[in-house]
Length: 141
Image (tube, rainbow, N blue to C red):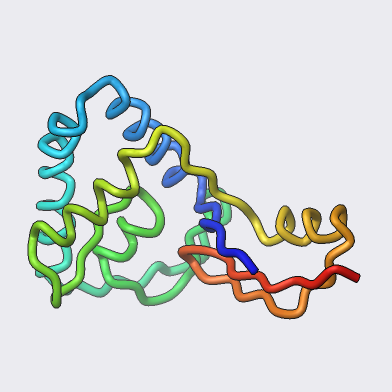
């Protein structure tokens, strides 16, 4: 039984790695402070509560067509700017910091998970793929 982060589209992957790399040059306190502007942007976007309609799928960036909140568009496809109306600034900021502070943060595809299970003679009993991650329950054959 395991859970891994889902690989995102190319802009989000690049941005996550870029920000994470920049923060590695800082102390945790400096990184915390540096990320505050990102958290404030996420809150501002979330408070706008703007829904847009992406007219057609943008395959080059893995952005699906359809209605999406502007904050969620940024969050899922450009960079992590977490927002939750029920949390305060420090709680939201901690979620952003937790994502960007670690030196190593791996993301995977459902195909990779299936290959791991196959290579290790595991039968997948349950898999759930969400935008954030992949949950897998597998059993030795």
